[in-house]
Length: 212
Length: 207
Image 1: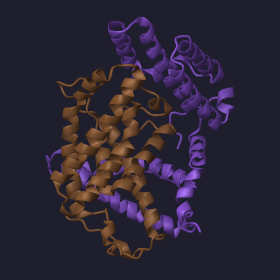
Image 2: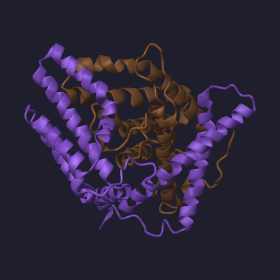
Image 3: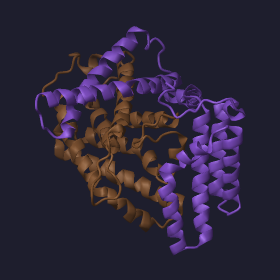
């Protein structure tokens, strides 16, 4: 499970902090940054995040910069836009806020194991019991998806090979039709296998409006 | 291409708590995986448009039009959960909680809603469904809904006027129309070979 994930194993105080605490702090930070759009708040938050990432989580500066790569064009574009349309102050506020949030979220991802985050999601979804959802199913579904990703990719590659072997120069998207049909059949057999192992032994909780 | 469903039992004879629940779970999990795999397909670089076209929103459209409203929306919610726990399955190998904090996160949040709307429209058209109706559903759910959520989000988040954000996203429109067309053709063919959506009208009245 962790081979695919962005978790970065280390021994650090931030790695030992429970995932739920880190997620709550992340949520609080995003609320704070948008509720108080003043200049000293955003750079202060960014500084705290960078200190926590380098000191608290023992990530390398290179890892931090890699997290900003997907948004760096945005950062530059935003600053340029605000310089033209408004002023430097609101531009730097928007850029610093974005950088602080993206980095903080990346730190939580890099220091929390997938299984711990799944446990937090299940805990958050516990109230869904009232509308007839089994929270345990969510963890099972996430695990199934992570397992199915390489399987679906392999099926797709096999179909493309078969089509190429028949000399088919068909449009690429026609590969999707046999792939989807195969996947739907796979869902069928998977469901049977799960039921055979007792997946349906626990009935779903009754929704609130059907309780008497 | 005429595959037949492996299970000849009509949907209504299956019990509500029986195979159906687990089967829906498998459909949802496998479609979340499909959306992830579509993100790995190398993006098509179109000369005129500076942003590469990725196949991921194709998965949003297919999930809605193959699985229907509820399961399609759940499949995309599950995909976002997989992204959130740190799997780099967004196109370009992105993932983790950082993408939910970025300026384009509104588009991500819109995906489950878009899949739900596409599925709902598909169910509405199901009896006379063809590629034309599928294209209409994809445009309404997969383009209008996604833009209606993603554009204001970007503008609020980055403190940019709505109009700027609006014109910027129109670079994606040609690619999105192509994807809506492709998804419509695929959904129509899949419907003919392996229909998954069952209309509530076919179920007995005394549920």
